[in-house]
Image (tube, rainbow, N blue to C red; front, side, top):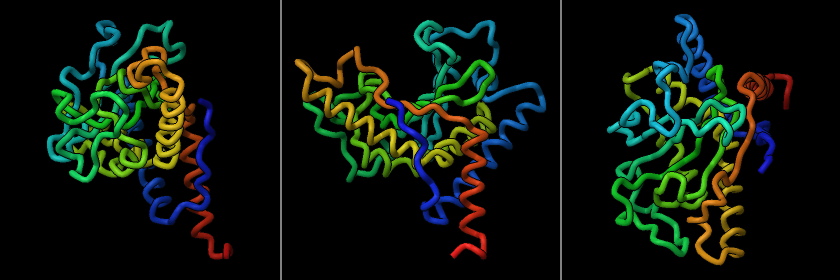
Length: 245
């Protein structure tokens, strides 16, 4: 599980432009928070002294009832995730999923009716103690216990993820939505790798691999935010260079 960043040099111009804008939004949100000594993580967690592993932050999650996007932040015990403070889990709720997109056949109960609040889990964003993103990853189904959608369908839903509300933190809501757009090609790659991992695991499993607690993270990509933004801006400049045929 060590994929490299996707080559973005041949992306369509509209996709590259959107990634450039997303990068600007990500930096602006971090800049504004930094002006008051805050960070993306700090604005979600609040009081670090009372921060507790496994608890959801903010309480009740962040839910946009119009776009049906949802996310929360939480942490595992430090020994489980060295170098990570915690991570965001990103979802699209049932009402935001078109009828033509259905949970996958995985040999286990996986219909919308099998879950109290069915959602599509898209990815997670790992953060370091300084409030900077350090990795993107996907998880096995048992981790969030939501319907499992295949990679192609999950990718089709990525554009629907947009937390377009002011509370509880407008900068964080904009930031997390922009991160999905900034890393969109890499998220697609991670989702395809996730499916490959689970297909292979299912072939070898005595029981259903999607319930196998030994398989937790199904794909992972270490990221460097500054490097990604520089790369996106360079690719955009290249496509708009009149000297390039």
